[in-house]
Image (cartoon, helix red, strand yellow):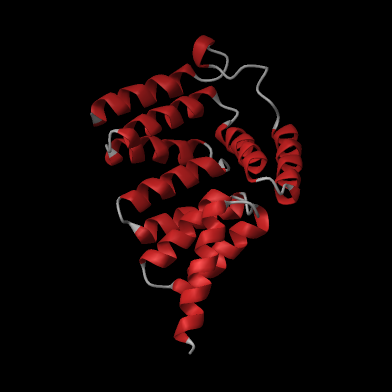
Length: 193
């Protein structure tokens, strides 16, 4: 399988910009336009008090995050998702390593790789990729949720609570985060008695 991956990677890289189907199109939006859309979506998400409407806004944010601006990277992200779906984590990591190498400024590449490492219980590697994701996109509630889950899984409940609280500061209507903050707050308060 690695030889297939290597062949496909060489094919993608050889195609390069301006070479037909693999090329990025002029319709690809600029980073500044995407940032403006994200800023508006995050503002709306923070103010929204209807959980279903907030979920729709969050889905729009995920769509923005998923658009790398590169057809080649978007294709590798799709391939990585298929590999994750079949639990072929090694192949997924191969694609995601290429994504983070080709565009180290693409936060979702780092976040997806953090998720794969988490699924493999490689918590230290996942944390490193979460850190990079948050360096590039501090509002990445998905990465913060992953951080909270790792903290909870490793017995660091106070840190998990703090991470979930950071999620709620960005996405106040996230039901899972609300439930986690409530449960962890009760647990930690009970320990203090």
